[in-house]
Image (cartoon, rainbow over all chains, first blue to last red; front, side, top):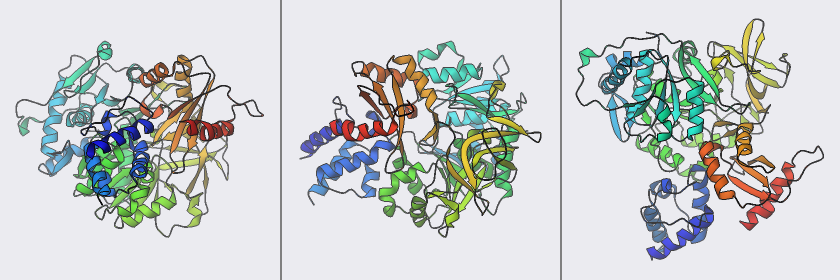
Length: 80
Length: 500
């Protein structure tokens, strides 16, 4: 399941940052992706929430250090 | 000794074992910082030449912060350079400030482009330095404390040289006005600004002046997330911030709580009352200040203590007043011809905190004389309300605030015009969350867009790079034969965003 989420997230990131060259890995962090900063972060989170039809708590948003941690969180939400 | 770092030395004696800095997840006591600073001071002192101005190619590590202290205690002015700035911008600063020595920490891999300048690596000392040997003697008496470069309306950055007298007057205000700002040695300040942004001087030196601890925000990840984490984990008590952070946090503000916070000090951009109310409800024990001051006025020179019972007279379209002048600061509201006006006009300042010209005496229309005193014109249009508080009405020129940074459109336009031959225009766009974005419209097609974007990154710092670059067949003109911003914005929303 986490691989599917990674794939779906990669599509979201490519569209959001208008960059087809983005390759997401579990260990990817904000510093690895150009323009992933304060300005884009909230909109990115909103886009991810819409894509997966979930709502993150702020503590969850604070805890995302890597894409892998984001995936675990999405997985937990999807499993209810 | 007359230096911005004099109080730090006194506190090293008073509080040797108290924490002074928290950086890279490690605490450093006053005694440890003093030793590291002394080691760098000796490195500077050993140089053949005496230097009046010394650059710091900053890295937000302990060596960079100790370099600032060492330069100040040596008696020279420090000039911060920014690793994130493109080479061209740093080069302009190095040349304009005539820097013959630039310190950089051992943690930086210096780009070979800088080899034409005299860079000196500072390293952590290998041997323990004994306390009794730490004697700082001012080698020169440079009246300038630091030089910070701001975006210039002529297209080139301007050097703002803040004197020891300017900065002393700034700190004196806080010491005198204890009823307003009662900082003490138990405070925990957060430092979130890049060293090329002058509020960093407040966040770094203010705690050292009081024997308190300064927590340096790590320069990684998503900045506002890191700020919240550090404020929570380290129970920060004093937070100088740009109001933009509140706009980022708005969605989650109900889930935040900072009971230990004693002071929120906002400056650098407009504070919206609607968001101030929400922030206050989560920082119940904190005094919330809205402050104001261009770099030329030494960090901030006005203050407004926000209360939930705010008088509607202190609001202008929901923007909170920035209050009254610091006690040693005089102000005038003037028209285009520098004549005093009674209602709306350009805010101008004079006083011990205010500079009277730019570095190298560069002529500027920003300064004028009134009754023998030199005033600095801020470019901000204001009105004084019935309660004696300033209301911000807008800019008198094309200057923008992006994430707290002053941005002159002409500086960006000049760079773009060296890269492309097509017609273009920059359009500032205020988004729903009040954040400003910059759109660049270029007439023609986008066949060289990748190279163009790359060149922009090499010439401009990130905050000056347009958020969107839009190619359009014909740039529409309005009745005055100027580019029609309304039509361009409408094109952006209806056609460009829909396609992309």
